[in-house]
Image (tube, rainbow, N blue to C red; front, side, top):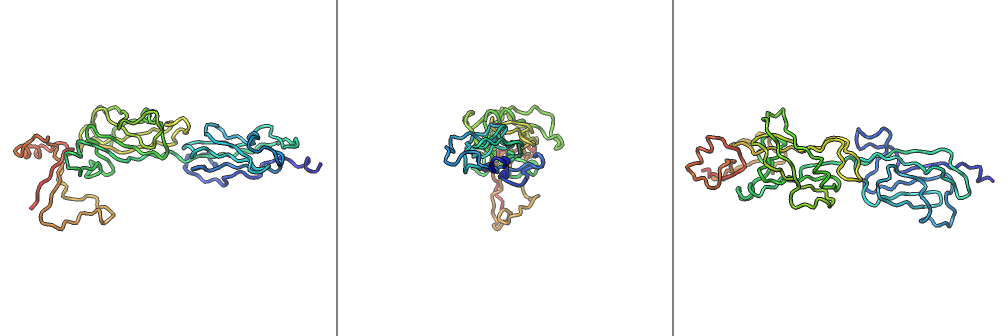
Length: 317
């Protein structure tokens, strides 16, 4: 009789206090990351002592119920949900006891407690730009971030592959369909049709991967500034939520000709700073000349300030 007078309530739900991954998360929402388990503690035993805990029905529900995982009873009054893998990004979840939940001796829960959770936002960064032509033309020293058109941009020669890294494994076909190549108007880029995108590196479009290999169908105009954008609201996997904010990486066409005598931005790390110590140096120049051009044509190429992408070395004495 005494036990029957005790109400069935939720006393604790963990993970606990709200902590935001993003300013766009719902107010008072708690965070879930990696493989955090959700645990709900009740004021009374819901299943009988000695009952089959693994076969008992779930005591609470996670909405939307898209994340694969399993429920189990830790004790007669504690239920737990474990995701099968890391929590997918950009989810907004509600956790609450199932409706009509009763104890093993028939006491029904009168009020439901709802707790809101969110998972970390998806992130995207530029992993690398790979160009066989530029690498071969410069004896392997070409780098997309060396002497860029503008600080923070990476050069994309014709036929190059752009490798994007995501914080979670995406569906390549969905991610490619959502990506947009946009010009950066405030950088003086001229009006030009930007190339379409396709999956590169012989990547399997159906296999989840945290790296996406993108090729441009055509090439970026010389010197143009652009960005590869994953718009807010994109869903790049069936289990993910819609991205909360725009994600982008900065790209450019071939860099114009330049003599790299001056470092306009001195690297913070001393080992990256230029410290010439010898009288004879090899200076790599972006010249844009074809490999078949002879030395007599070099002066005309320099005077014309052709687009970069090729490379060569001049001996300084």
